[in-house]
Image (tube, rainbow, N blue to C red; front, side):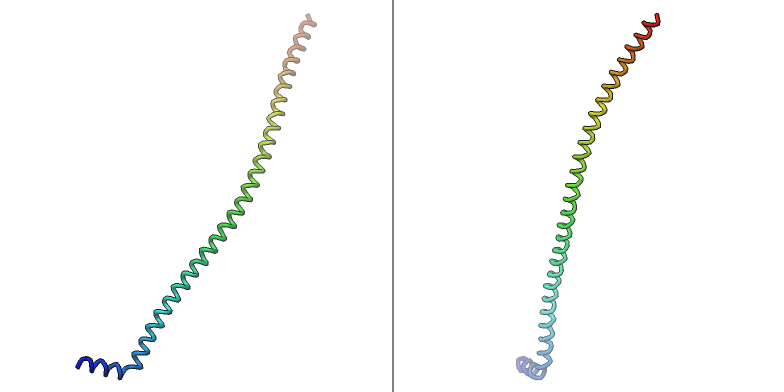
Length: 111
C-alpha cells in the first residue's frame, strides 16, 4: 500500500520533483562554482600582494645601495677631515713652541 502511494505520488508530481531536483542541483553547482571563483580571487589577491612586496623590496634594495654609497662617501670625507685636523693640531703645537721660543729670545735680548 505504501509503495503504491509513493509511486502514485511520484507519477502525479513528476514535473515538480524534477524542478526541485534541478533547482537543488543548480544551487549546489552554483555554490561550488562560487567557491572556486572565490578561491581564484583570493589567489589573484595574494599574487597581487606578492607582486607589491617584490616591487617594494626592489625599491628598498636600491635605497639601501644608495645609503651604502653615501655612507662610504661620508666615511671617506670624515677620514680626510680627521687628517686635516691632526695636521692642524700638529702645526698649532709647532707654532706655540716657536712662539714660546721667540718670547724667550725677546726676553733675553731685552736684558
